[in-house]
Image (cartoon, rainbow, N blue to C red; front, side, top):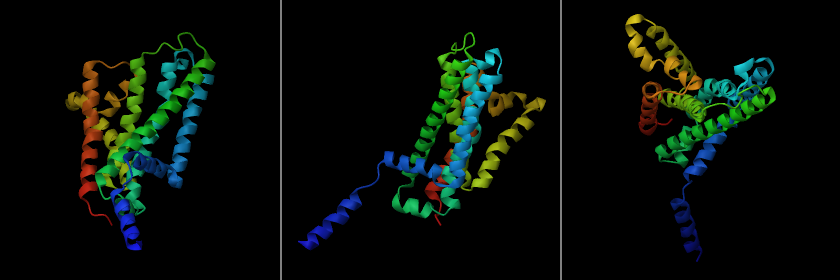
Length: 255
């Protein structure tokens, strides 16, 4: 009887595996497990609130409308959020926890999906904070037309944050090292913007320069061609490094 009992336990444990929801929660917790991750996210939250308060107090006219406030309050998440995304992936290697992670979850693709879902969840929370801060600031300022904002522009603001964070995850996966990934995430688009300012590259820069294509998402409702430019830019700066990073994670040796 004791032998049967001992046999039943390993079989049950072998067949059971953590669900994708639990893996996503684990990845979300990893974002705050380190001091760098915790203080970075605290700084993002504090800056979001500060921006809303500053515009409510010192802003003038249209700056205090909800649409303009939302465009301002998402900036901390869209600028610093990618660093959170980089650390979410690269910290597995810099802190040498990848072997433990993939030992517990041998199917590496599920870990990659969980990290992407965690990035989406983080983006949703950050955007919700930005919306709340902007709404309170707009209510306090109480200027004419404060709530006259197209719903499409709110959607674009949310997508802007999502693309930014996923871009950080993509660079973190492609390089698997925090410092190079963070530096290149910011330097490469800036370098391309400088090169794209040359007259003979003006045409292609309009499709691949994120400072031109992505920033329009916060300021105006995009046309069909502008959406095509955003998609092309995202394919270069998010999808391509994400595919490279996914291949590296799935095929690379874990040490």
